[in-house]
Image (cartoon, rainbow over all chains, first blue to last red; front, side, top):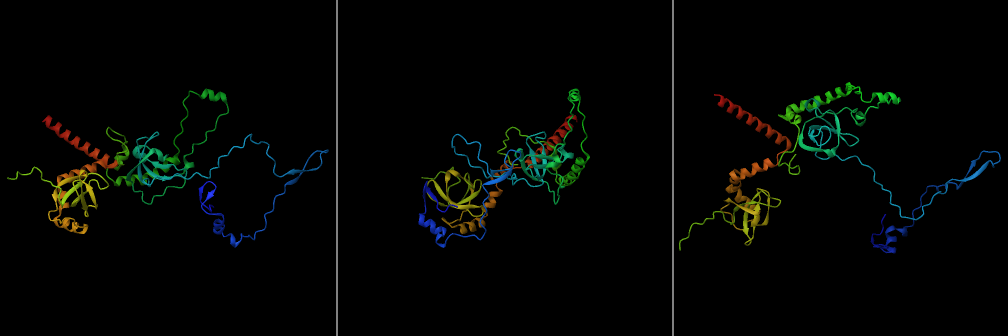
Length: 238
Length: 139
């Protein structure tokens, strides 16, 4: 608590008596009714094994440091900042059409569903329209357009969260030989999990219904976005 | 000495409707209320959202419209009364000049979906024209 604002190093705005007056020291210091904190004992008794060693030994509770740095250098202060959840841009609300700028689906226009706990955005193509499935996307690689799809009261299933997108752990074969022989051969492709494709259909049903109500919106989501000559992103209105 | 007809038709005068070329009210229209000197005038646009202020001529464009009976140095309320009585702002909005400004503004500030829709419509029109032309060429 800065009781006296510093004007210049070692000179505060308030004089000593003024500081005391501000602190209310004439009222006396506060006394608390809490019992005095018991100091931990400096030494504790420890049992020691071995016949010829005395059975117990006094060992200090806090060990002295085994290492001291050669020079007393100023240590940087520890930061008290904690990582905060990523702030969602004001222009992005459920149902907003986003343009993906990077990744496998760059250039695609997708519908935003919600922001996940990790801060990533959950989007869907919808899959039937442009082939983009339920996917996580980073807010930084996205342009938010002012076009919105009305999702109404649609609430996504709680199970669609960050762990839903975690990669399944593949059991690694311990045999180096079989691994060596397996190299070069085409990997066995697993079919897309039924649960995920059904979840996709459930979500897309609502989105596609709403998209159908607006003229050309389906075509819009199907088409890719790109810059043409004379178009500059900082001059365009999205 | 006979006066030769002036080649100038738009004058800086009290009541002249002006288009603002720069500043926060760029593109808006106001009325000259008082002439300060050879550089500035007091303008006011109570119906168009231009606050009463002094404005240099170099950032103004004169329009062919004027509020003919506006008294010099009128306060904002009086300006509003005369502007509404003569309906100058409506005349300005109907003019080809104002409409061109409006379409340029709309084209520049179209959003991404709008741009896509325009592209579809142009494609549609192009297609129909080509089909009709091909039909004509065949016949």
